[in-house]
Length: 456
Image (cartoon, rainbow, N blue to C red; front, side, top):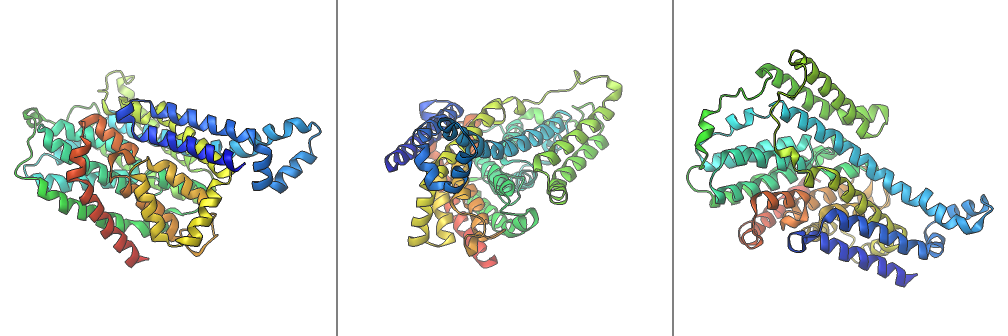
């Protein structure tokens, strides 16, 4: 049984390394995640009887007693009581992301964000940096950071013509989006997972992490400003912007923007009052936005006249591959939990480290090498709710897990899906990122950790 556990761990580590080096090996990360997720459960089933006796002795004995055909109880118990649990939890997150991404798509296709081009037209490079990152920080708090990164990269790409400036601002967008998403339960897949699991509440989570995240962003911007000199080099065609490239009137765009933001921020309240999964609230908001769009475009008799924005077409980041990737990761972490590997890791950490800040630092450093999603998912399954003073509802452990995975994943851009998006769009070289960005992220992270310690 120990040997099988080690094999499962080795398969997952190999898969995570392949997914983090996709820019080198060019292997589809969703394919690797799905393959590893299935393989580890096949390996698990070979020793399922021993694993079940270790992890679920009472539940498995009860299940066996209620079934006459003993030979079928192992596989059926695993599929019905273990594997299904992780798939359902993953689907709750996926359905929420589908709804929120569609909300942003509808708003973008109707020109709701076109005014950002006008707001961002400025000469000062440093002023542009702060304006761009603050807008990104705010949007990412309302929509997941991956979608926000792709949206803001598209807007920035329409304005800035100089490649070096594009790379610098793209890195700033990445940091701002990750930090903005980290302090709300709807702004990042990792924080959303914590909320769906029920270990944090929306208001307390945001109150605890807003200041550390915002201070981290400000420190990073201050350090990054030394790379920016003079004016922003923009495309000359931007000067002809009239603000009328959508068929909706300005007031209609404003109404749709307000309804979208209010709707997204009302999802936690909806979930708290009804005790329904968050994705139901997100779908309700999407339905309202669609009805509103239909009312505004009724006289146009269809949507074939609308200008389609290009950022949402990149299904590599926000389409079916992301869904399959997340399900594969969920299956892999589930097998890691059920074979007892995470319990052994918890015992080691509790005995030899037992410090929430050290847990956060370890999570962040590991997230910079491998995507932060599997590490946050593993961290969620590492400790049970109320098992320690730091793992109570809204405890420091859960907040540190979200914050450190977000900023730690930015140490190397391979640590987040948003980072992969930045690399694909702007072709950021790892050597350049290492020389100019890594140390600035590390300093900002240390300052944010200090602020977290002061406020907690």
